[in-house]
Length: 164
Image (tube, rainbow, N blue to C red):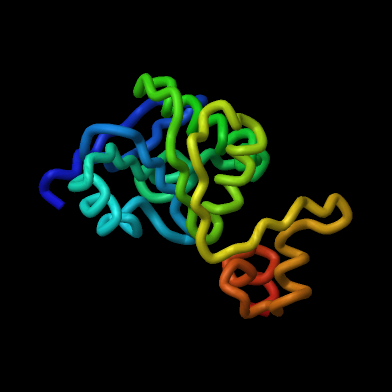
């Protein structure tokens, strides 16, 4: 991991931490919940040795990237905006986009908002699910998987119920 470079980039009103290594076509990795860039450490090393420039940021609110205090600042538009700003800052036109778990959701929104910036998409662990305007995502997870589903466990309303 000694070859991996860590930098902080100002983008979309926040400071974003990223790990990067290599040169060549760019692969942008989007981590799962509640993970960090570190989840991609093996892929960074492997693909960089094959001639790719690999970038794995800590997404908004994770790790060493800024965490705005209001939930209103965590929309798909904000997070994709962070990533577009990151690519613009680095002078990158297009990427191979790779998402895992929650990162897949961001990757799909990225492709929907800015298809011009994506060469190809690889997503793992979650199937595409279009937004349902009648149900909040966490309520859908809770209905399908119950309060013990890992995403539900991190919700304030669930934590208040558990501590009562």
